[in-house]
Length: 457
Image 1 (cartoon, rainbow, N blue to C red):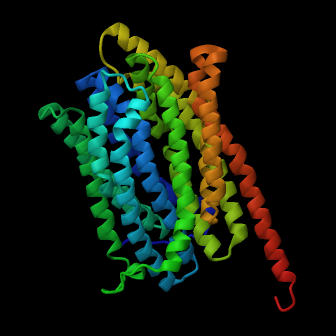
Image 2: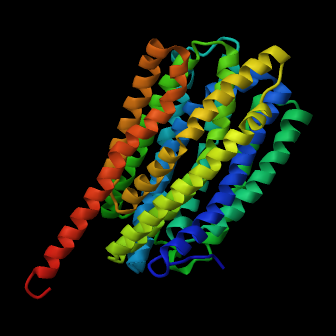
Image 3: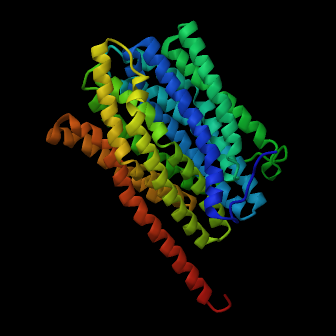
């Protein structure tokens, strides 16, 4: 039985925690295999290979985040239909979003392969790591349908209140990936391509597990011959999801600009930034989980018309985010040097220099981690309300702050300025998202009050 669950009743704190914890554990396993990828590449293949993989991180995230954007955008309407107990609407949304996901993936794949080499050249990728970066990203992009399959299916399950199945899927996928990493890279000597193939096989396993779970859910079971796209629903879904995708695209372009600047330094500097960026996922594990929980919570309660419950849940989520970020920050200050050191190998002098770069960058991000957590809380809450425009605007704010910082600060304070671009990007997004949420809730309350005062209301 799949753990489909309504979030329209019960204590918000308990609901958010019980929904987020499986997602957190799943994300821990996901980050575990990401870290193992980096460790195997860095320790077995060397700093050049680690730098090559890191050089492609933002381009990889651009493609991945576009697919995630569509999958998450489609899931908003699924959550709202589920909260409103609209079974027919839910089935139409499911089928239409499935077909749109296939179409979007095909377009993204074509664009990814067409622009891969030109973008890497535009980023000033050093000649020493250019071929390795192309190899790694080519394998990853070839597996885009697998990546989209998992993200879409997991988003559907989360929209229906099931965070346990994605957890099971990610645990199995992570263990699969770790074993295959060691087999393909250490035993078969397939290089960075082996690490990429291991990742894709792990994702395929997770997609299959989610699919088998969805097949057992009656409320979205569609009779044979009924798999046709509803045009009206498709328009609604694209209006919800397109700003998601554009938001992620803009953020990714900002990241590519950062990579362009970083690539102007030597391989040790690139490797140091790569080592810390591999921990980025660890830093925001709980933030992403709280965000998914709030998107589902807000979406279901919005569909049910429980607006005050929404505000209570978001306030609870914000407190949870600040407390959690403080705990993770403390852990990074205490153990961060040891953790990033696990990614780094090479001559002692080179390894020491790389470690200092990585740890300094990590400490700055950890110091302002609560800013990132509030970003996820309020962005996800707005998305659950069906507002994907202001989150898109926050992506533009991230872009301006990230690019402006990386281009201007080094001229003012030297290389130290490079470390602050990410933190200032988070701050820029918060300055858009937090006021936007409270304005939106004020408008909802105002509209509700006006409705109650109408004759016959």
